[in-house]
Image 1 (spheres, rainbow, N blue to C red):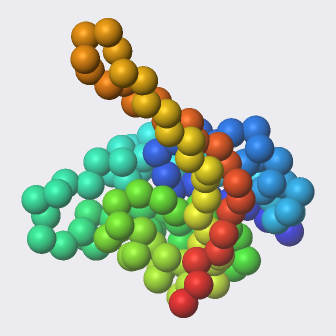
Image 2: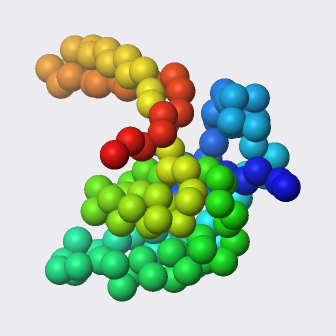
Length: 130
């Protein structure tokens, strides 16, 4: 059976991330959200009192397309992540998230302002634990 990873986050994978998914986790297929579902995931309205209904199409798509044991890379709005991680665990999926190393530098400019530069580099994926 093909081992898949489903991406519920708002970025493209980097080459080191793809390499880790393939080599460490044995992933054969990387599945991005379809555009309309990506729009739902990336634009969760902050004014909604609850978001489970807002995420229903994403959860339905994930259930229809995944198999037990598949990975789901979940990052985003904290409430949405909580809902999806719980859903994954109930469905026998393995929710993971990316960890990064952050390097920050500041430079004082001639006009007295400060320019901040941030560099993020992938370190590893980690499984959500309960």
